Amino acid sequence: MNIQETKKRAISTERLTMQLIALSDIPLVGPGDDLADIVVAGLGVSREKLCDGDILVIAQKVVSKSEGRTVKLDSVESSPRAQEIAHAVNKDPRLVELILRESTEIIRYRRDVLIVAHKLGFIMANAGIDLSNVEHGAGDDTALLLPENPDQTCALLRKKLITLTGAEIGVIINDSHGRAFRNGTVGVAIGVSGLPALTDRRGELDLYGRQLQSTEVALADEVASAASLLMGQADEGRPIVIARGVPMHRRDGSAAELIRPKHMDLFRARSGEALLRSRRSIRRYLQQAVPAATLDAILETAVSAPSAHNRQPWRFAVIEDTQIKSRLAGAMGGRLRADRARDGDASDSIEKDVARSYARITSAPALVLVCLTMEDMDRYPDAHRSAAEHQMAVQGTAMATQNLLLAAHAAGLGASLMCAPLFCSDTVRSVLDLPSAWEPQALVTLGFPGHSGKPFRRQALGDVVRKIRAKP
Image 1 (cartoon, rainbow, N blue to C red):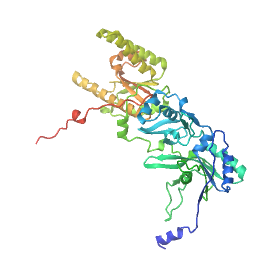
Image 2 (spheres, rainbow, N blue to C red; image 1 turned 135 degrees about the vertical axis):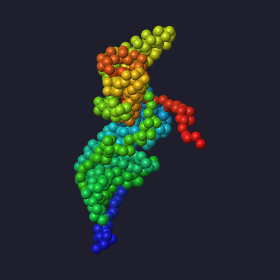
Image 3 (tube, rainbow, N blue to C red; image 1 turned 60 degrees about the vertical axis):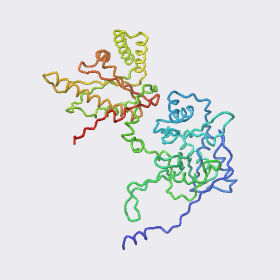
Image 4 (spheres, rainbow, N blue to C red; image 1 turned 180 degrees about the horizontal axis):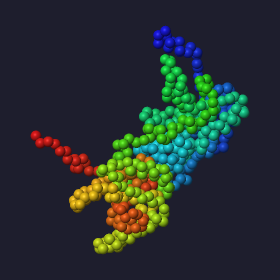
């Protein structure tokens, strides 16, 4: 028997059909409305009934409205960070503030686009917050947020509908999401109950007898997308669809199955070039602690930098204690004041600089003092080679510092480099009780960004690069 004959024998001759039914005359939904009662009424008007195995797909907007997830923009006070991001993305600062509140991190943004990680785990535009198809009063704007717990809502709705109709069904809440590398939106499942959201086909055989190695099917997303064709996106008014005849093995599931863990998300990671070009100096931070694991990961990246002879001359002192930050800032400010006074500078100018330095140091959730040590470097009897060896330690420490800054940026943190410790190394060493062999080089302030950073200007390559070519 040849391969083609084997294939013919493997192909099923079973006739499969699937049906989509949009319920008609669904009324506008308001806060507190019972969705199960609305579904049952819609079944009656449409002369339909639920059958075992049916999947009820209901639009996210309807669920959010019933849960009272509306917010008047006039009631929202935008933070400085929201205002800066709003300027960059050309959106209402109040809307951006809501997006930030509903999110755990910003993934990407440009003019007219703000992609975030929602608190529920979804990567989506604007945290799923919408202004369309939402009732507005005179002179106000109303935003609609995602449901608090879509999986739980599906489970409760399913339980009540089973009681009311006697049919063993599944329930999906669907929403419209964009995709990273394709234009247009598609329906996806953000809440699931009574069916597998993800079906694992690994280990099954294909038509040629080969074992499937990586095939997982987003069943709930496929059903949600099909239902979206009937629901529409504008004024269709068909928010509830029955999917009948969906081929599946029954088990309970949840939309949480569809969320890829962050450490496995290759598309969220920035390319090296984009990472380098998008880093900015951030000097204002949210008052939110930097997770210890994140800080450790950043330092691990810092110490992976190259160094002369692989002597790794860098040393780091991490400061998060408020009182220590205040003592350090005060001592450095005192040294700055004394030095500037000896220079004959005006006292008001000196005090402004001292206050600015103090604020930068004390307002950062975390500080990393970058030092170098010559303990493991080579020693020479002459001053010239000794100076060169010290310079090599400086270069290695600078490369570690650059790694630290980029790692912080990649982790979603902001950072800024202060070179002030070079001017008062003995003061810094004394306040922090550092070993005498540690030479302070720079102070890095770290935290979650309180602004997006200013665009920087760089000289043209022709002004800073000289290409050396052989003479003809």
